[in-house]
Structure formats: structure tokens, C-alpha cells
Amino acid sequence: MKVLVTGGSGFLGGHVVRLLIAGGDEVFALARSAAAAEKVERLGATAVWGDLDDPAAVDAAFASPGGAALVNLASLGFGHAPGIVAAAEEAGLRRAVFVSTTAIFTTLEARSKSVRLAAEDAIRASTLDWTILRPTMIYGAPGDRNMARLLGLLRRSPIVPLPGGGQGLQQPVHVEDLAGAVVAALAAPGAIGREYEIAGPEPLALREVVRQSAQAVGRTPRIVPVPLRPVIAAARLHERVSGRPRVRAEQLERLAEDKAFDIGPARHDLGFNPRSFAAGIREEAGGRA
Image (cartoon, rainbow, N blue to C red; front, side):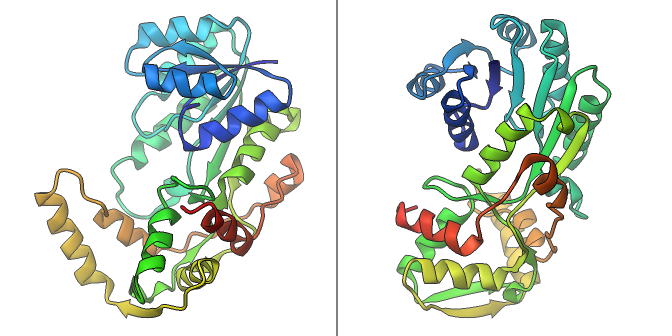
């Protein structure tokens, strides 16, 4: 099968492209730069020039493979979804899998929440044979934007400050398990018109996530609970004075939210069987994240 992938040069994209090619699919990957094109071509995909900020280029890129299915890994938080849907419909790409995020369930007034919700509405209203996957926090390989920082901190510091005491539930998903779910969804007729939460096998308190991560790097740091409100206030101040803050107040606020999800439908329909966090974080630590 011909498959057009957006976001193929990203963290998740590399894993998905490799799996598709290993399964015998012919993969075309949207690339907006020479570096992105080189990366996807190293994976064995054919690079197709296109920038999601340029509707005409997207239309041309989607039409070029001819009859491909669509796997959209590009973020739905930037307002591109209507254009992507329209281009896919115009190009005759009937089957489409879209990766969204469980962040749409936040109770916070997140800046991108309304954009993501509108994106999902546009997908549902389309004529495509769509599937929506919503992963939780993604981890599992060097370069992830979530656990890599924690592993680095654990390796160098005997003390780990934990905002709010780490009681909020987390259910991280390993990037390879998520990639497998994406490829399985594409091949599953029963997944058409369905939405799935994609997460680890069980929710864990953040404190337990930190403990298991420390164990993975052979450390036993002292975990120090820190009141959440002052830390959030400091993060807001840092955002105002820094053009590129390493941590945003919204990220800290979300630590207090329970992020626990039912993966039963994904298990049933997609054969989704995620590895434990303890096993996954050991793999990531072994890869020197």
C-alpha cells in the first residue's frame, strides 16, 4: 500500500516510517526542508516537498503519490487540520489515521486545546475513512521531550524536587508501542470512524514514575516535595522574561491533573499491548537519553 506520512521526520515519525516500510508499504513523507527530506530518505521513504503553512504546496504534495493512504503525525495544535483534510479529500486519499493527544481532556485553559478540538471536529466531519489516536506522554528513546530531561537530572543530582509531591497520575506510552498502534490502526477496517486513547498499561503516580526512572539509571535520589503554587508562579515569571523557557507554567499545572485512560478499546481493536513503564524506561536509560 502507498502511504503518505506527515511528520515523518519527527520523533514518532521515524518509528512509524520504519514500521510501515518493514511491513512492505511504499512510504512517501512530507518534507519542508532539505534536512527533513534527508532524514526520511535515510529511513527508506520518498520525500515529497510540502509545507503545511502553504496550502497549494500541500495540495500538490498530497496528490503526487496517487491513491495513497494518509498517516498524519504532524501536530493538530497549529490549525493545519482543515487544510490537511481538504487536501486528502481532493487527492482521493480515502483511508486516514490522525494522531491527536489526550491533552484535549485537560481542564486547564490550554492555548492549543480549542485548536485541537476543532481539528478533531474537522476530521469527523470529513468524507475520509478516518481513525483518531490520542497518545499520552510519549517516551522511550533518546531525544524524547519528556523523560530525557528527567533521566539527565537523575544521573547528575542526588536531590529531585517534585512539584506538588508527585501525586498526579501519569500513564506514559513508549514510542515504539505508539508507532505499532498507528500502523495497526491503518490496517484495521474496524478502526474506521473510531477514536482511541493510547497509553501505557497502567497509570502511575508521578512520584512512582520518578522512582522507577531513578532505578533505571541506578540512582536512589532524595525526592523532595515542593509546593506547586510558588513553582507555577516562578515559571510564569520566567516565561515573561525568556523567549524560550525550558518549562512552562501550563506543564507544571498539568502535573496535578490525573492522566489515566482506558486502553481497552485499543487492546481489543488494534491488538495494542504496551510494555510496562519500568521496562520502557530501562530501555530508554540504556540508550543514554
